[in-house]
Image (cartoon, rainbow, N blue to C red; front, side, top):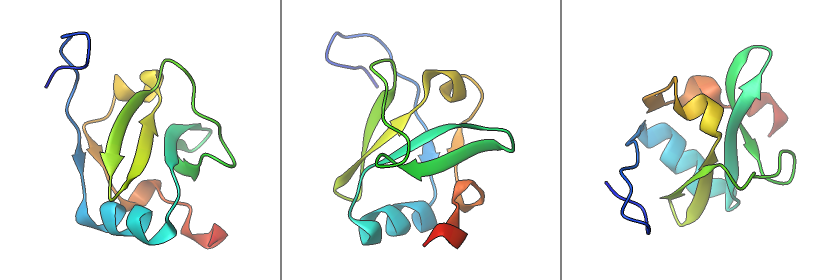
Length: 85
């Protein structure tokens, strides 16, 4: 996969549960770093950075921290903070 500049972009597997969750929440999310590891938070809580990778998910945008992008291949429901919702 390539971005608008023709540069190769890493591909991620996003589980159906995460796609469904983001679609139902109807807001953009950011995958960022927490003391417990990678976490998905609404952009109202954790604003995206210019260095983030942007992916369209369920009609919303998922921003992936450039730091986390180096270490993950799969984005799954273990990264959701479902107790907030």
